[in-house]
Image (cartoon, rainbow, N blue to C red; front, side, top):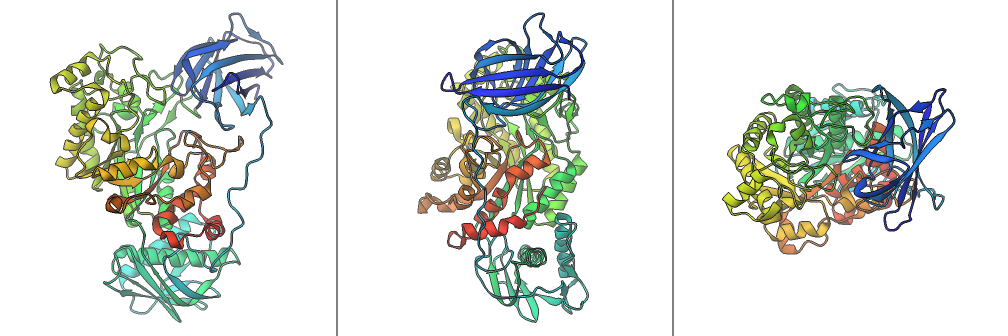
Length: 634
């Protein structure tokens, strides 16, 4: 690597400080007539001051700089510039240049190796361990921990086999859980088979209509009996057996029940996880593996965030431009520049309709509902890049910027074709996704969006609306009507309630900004899923130390904070029934590789799974810490 970029941040001037960038030429030739491109989560705002360079272009996290005129960077030389006017003060080592490259006058792109952001004023302290050593209350590998267990520990059987008379359906289900385990732990020994084997134990199945649909009971003796009232409970009981067998085969601290009983059912009906595939595109195989991980932790809803400013990921027959244009970012792609973690080359991808159906089928076989999300009305830069006819030509360019820094990035309610396009998109996706739940986004629309669009202002005048959020509510009511006509429930982020909102009937809102929002929404009659950034956003850094990975807008979110957070803790009794459950959110600005995913998602994802399943009195942080080390990885 012949070019190397260093970052340093100084806290002066307060409160957001200054960013110094230094480019070293370690090559054999002079560097002249070039521009420097950088992707960074810490952005330079319009009111900036830069010494030693000029900011030529910025779109969200993409920045393009021009050096002083006639600069010649000879071998061994360096060029530095200093920028003030940042959007926020960095908190972690990954908060500045994530990727960088040089573009020559010829158009050739040269890669640059980037270093971590350093602090100019202090040496960083080492991060604290994320998990304590922990201690087991009982020597059984179970995560989430069951709500009732009394069992004696002993040696584990070699494997479990189906008892005589086991139905074909139960044998199939038994082997499907064995296949799940084999996908997650391909080097581990197999856990289930049909026929008896020396050293094995028989597994019998029984029906018990008194158990809830997702509940199960395991009675341990010479034959193990799994009782349930429905397929979901049978599956969860088999997963519990698989976890205990795997733990006993993997770690000598774990054993297997010889006698006793587990009787179990989940705390919440909504035990979900979101995955953002727009900021970073995860392959078809990676999405299925993520669903496997959710199933292993007995979660039951996969929230598939298919669109955002950075890319459209769902194949739509009526508008192929959404994926031929809106699914790929690159330095030379108008309207779709590189974003955090990208290089200059084209990057992206999308899922065909057959692949989306296959994901739904894969998840359904594991008892997981797949809820799609398309972002409306904000977070739509990729849509407008792909379908420029949806913009108002009279709207002032760069007249509004939401928090992520994309200019004029919302579907325009004043453009009639907006609703024709949405009707077609929703229609196609409803054919693919059988879930009653359809997520329409609704978050982070800039407070002054559309105010300089003549077409939007005309719409406001015709409808008697005042301001951005009343217009947003009118827009979302139109979208809800499309969903209602197809038998769907509208799901959205908590901002859907702004400006009068949509009615609470057949509406579920996700409280993400802070916990108090969920309580307020429930009081107003909305069903609520709790997913506050301060506990359940897995892109947040897991500690306050500078050397931790991750985002910082919600503060550091340690695994213990995630595990011990009680989402319903402050809900008044009269509103508690409105709380449907909890959900993890995996926002992928920082999740640029599987290694980054594994570093940030774990152990907090299984912590959320246990918080969703295990009653408050059954939670135990030290027990969880001892259990979580066995988790599978992406």
